[in-house]
Length: 331
Image (tube, rainbow, N blue to C red):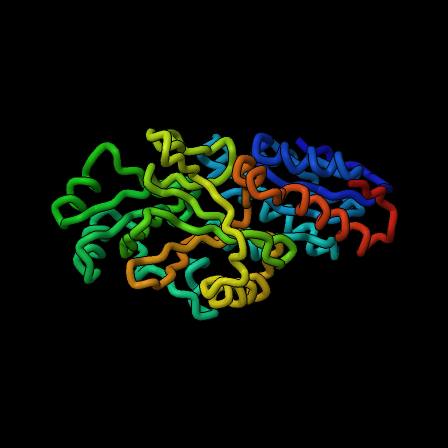
């Protein structure tokens, strides 16, 4: 738990609820000798009456916090961000970003606003409505997913009305934590892959191709690594995560990156990952924006690009911009 106390040293404050995900960033900040504070909201007592300390505040709250027993961490974080913003503190991925992180409905509206294609989706608030939504969609194959999710929560591929009815009435069906289940057009990727595009400081950093053949839990973080990531044959060894060289200069990159950047500007996002899938006709469907991006170490080592280092540099530069050159930067 972060202890609210006076500090005269401008620092980077990392607001989060998962120390395992945050550890690589804190290590990078330490390597660059950037002062930081670990603000863990998984267990917090928050004093609204004290002034905010000097520094910048980077929100890494996750939509899947409830899966780690931290059900109300996002709600606490929204209040903290409002408190910071009311005092003029510099926040990165502030309240607008958190509202987007915890709602795919908000994400899809932001994507459609700039002309990015999203799968046709119905939002439902009951099991009966899931069946009605399936009947209304002009597709045989659909997927269900939680509106407030992360880690592929609630994702189920269903191929008939009978399958939908059986699923919603089964013990395996899980209600979304916010009560909203999405019924969505299933996009079939010929190569069973999705692509995740990472931005840091609203600038493109890299795109990573993710092998989705093992399932729907596609978080690139090391702690969410897919099982069975290597092909069984010796001659066709594949990795589940591979950074795409030259993505920004490809036709796909040129078509998508400017629109993704516009989403970040419109929605006040500073750090984010966009996920899209490409169907057999070459259409790209964006289906997720993640403002709590994690990065796969193995993929980065193979490519020589390290996002946590870049993120630490960005946060250090933000402190220097707002408080003067008081940081010792190394490396």
